[in-house]
Length: 176
Image (cartoon, rainbow, N blue to C red; front, side, top):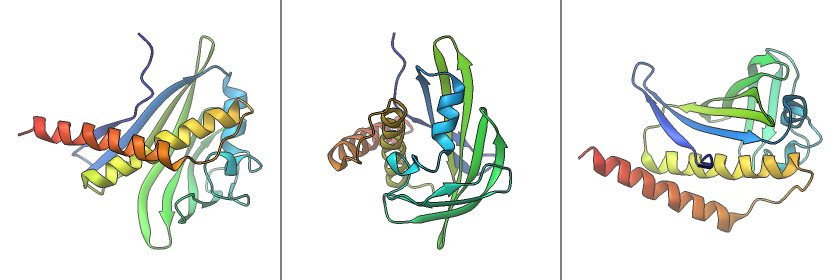
């Protein structure tokens, strides 16, 4: 059975947060995946809305990312292990959006990328948007890594948003 490309939510009641999680296996070794993840010249192909964003290549290094939605992420790197782990706050001028992290794991034929975005906003619409945003972002990352960068596709994003919204409504209904 092929791996799912969908993200899901992990509820962490101890920390009063919810984690958006994606696991994707990419047909590339960890080194090129890592390089694309932190390469300033390619961030606008998948993570930022324009050239000029950066991720400093060290723990406590600064992060500056103008996002596709118009917000500017300004944060510091919490964890930086070359070819393995990158984690930083998803913070803007007026919003503490939690933390994002990528963990790379070598596997036969490529790299398994574990992505998480922890946040404490508990609204289902918020998480449907986060899931759609990160699904699209990871699609763009894969296209960039393959050498075929694409632009943000709002129709595809809308389809992801509706897909995740339906999944969340179904999940909430199952709790009664």
